[in-house]
Amino acid sequence: MEEEWGEPNLSGDRLNPREIVGHLLILWPVDYIAHSPTKFTRPDKPSDAVILDVCDLDLPDEVGVPGKLCRRVWWRQSRLIMMLKEKIGIRMLCLMTQGTASTGFNAPFELISVLSDPDCRARAETWLKANPDFCPSTPANKPQPGSISAVAAPAEVPYVAPTTNVAAMTTLERLARQSQQGVHLPPPPPREGIPY
Image 1: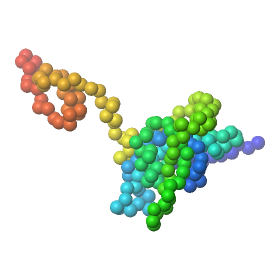
Image 2: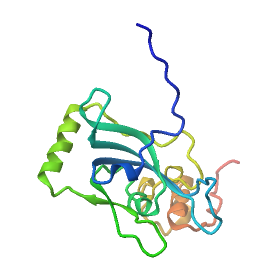
Image 3: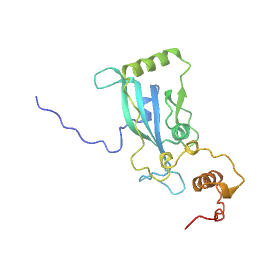
């Protein structure tokens, strides 16, 4: 039997929200890109995107088992972006729904949490137990300008206790304090007896 050939997937899997309305999803938001223009980009509108891994528990995978996994899916629908861009790195269990259309606009896609539904949780736990080696995708190797992965989170900056004596601070302490306060401290006065 001859082996099949595949093509590289440069941008990630495709999973259109329109096609999965009513489906139970495990979501892992991977990244948010603030500006990713397309041919439809307008100068007065943002052209952002959220990138995520999605396990659709209502679709079968390649071998017919419930739980089709789509990697690095790009969603550009504004309501979904608003719901997901602050949840990077957080696993979620949701149903995809479609809201009510306002005049002149399409009905937005929305996610509804189903963590309180024991049947939905049981289905998700079953998939997670069957796939113990699963790891969500990581942000692209080269973070794009405006992506959350391109900026260090404030929690990653170590806390430096305040010191009133700037001259007694080491250079690293002074730089850390400057970065936390957003101000530039004057350099310490030269110490006596230090050869330059």
